[in-house]
Image (cartoon, rainbow, N blue to C red):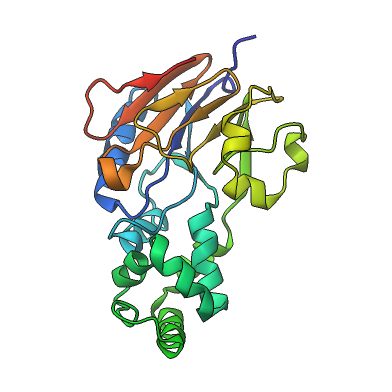
Length: 249
């Protein structure tokens, strides 16, 4: 059976943004133009998480997403492991020693926090955490506090990283939904639905019988991807590419 999106609906799933507000703005403009071709359809934007870190515009990304970037589109925001890391730093300054080296420093800089640029002093981590608490807008904190772990539409299951093979979708745990890689990526297991995910960057979108991987490494490549699902149709909208490539089975 060919997987289908719900009737009367067009879904747009957006891969990992990682602090590239410039690409997000470009992609959303393209999505808006695409959506205008179907005024009678219910249109839903599903963001797969990892809005922050690595790129230099994390604050701007969150600011855009907490506004109303595309009037007339419903929005679903999923949680990524990098949002989890940001919140861990707010709870425990010592975690900054880990977060700093996989993208957190860029996020802090986007909010004007520079205490950790040249220092690994524990006291500086706490000063940075307190500073972050002070400057983080309430609407950004609310956004981070209310991210979902997964979403389902029609024959598709949307999540940040993937799922644990052999476990029913409704029984998946947060650690796997946010972090899993090889056990999921290398598996040929089938699930009740096709899993649409990000988390693991690839040069091209991966279309497999059991999953679709949308992380095209935007912060490195300049290619941010949206998967468009309508009925049985699947197509891509990507920044910087007129004719996007895809890796199929």
